[in-house]
Length: 403
Image (cartoon, rainbow, N blue to C red):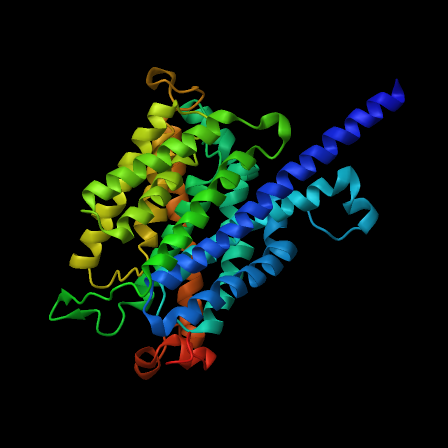
């Protein structure tokens, strides 16, 4: 009997490790989606820089999260023997890998907002500080119950803040951190003339679409594998993600008047919003949440690009991740209620306060980090470097041999 119990425990442990490893790999592959979405959106002279930023940001994020950030969020470290670390089939190590891919999404999100005019090394330094200090502080508040914040929300508003897969913890944080960086950097040279926006057309729609598809497919690892163990896996999360994706796509198509950039960002807007309540919503509720998010993205991106010159957000990461992420956090307190067909266990006020807390942490941390780095080394390329493009200015090579 003991041998049978031991075999069952080993099977469960190895299955959980394999499950979360698959999730980590799927979310890791999403970073290729971030890269190609940016490559297709920026002008041709900035394509190499887009690719290089995403992969180097991931490398820097790994070091920052391994040595500092993971400990701040979860109170654990890796200063132990390999024998100890490999217990339970190395589940804790793979859990770190999975959560790292979330943390590294933050600088990948910021990258799309500050494209075409940012210095390379200063932003790598800023990315390391964000992933080591700012992001894990809020991550630990919400996903590890640090500092009694969740207990306070429950005592005050009747429930803890619910963010199953990171509408606010990951996407909201990334979008509002990007807002701080975009505000400090100001608009690209030539983007506005006499107060009117000058269109910088995407360089490659197929690459943009490829990036959106990679992100969309990987998102099912992002959401479903957030259960982190096999016994927590839920088909409801998968179908809610699907419905929100479809809702975002179709509404973005209509509101965006068939613009391919909006259409391919529509599913991402829906998926951002559904993360928080993907384990709570009824599929019809998820469809509505995703549809509202698709419309919110198109409307706010168009408004701010045309009316607010200083907010020159190249990929629209602030409305896509920041605003839609906050909407997703709040929506979990509406469509997650039993009265709206949801699973319950949430309150509107906890979701509202928790979402706004994420915005506050991101803005304070973002302006502190990017402001400090800007004061020390500057964040902006020179006007000549920007004119020549980040590819030649930073990497000394163009994306194609014909250039």
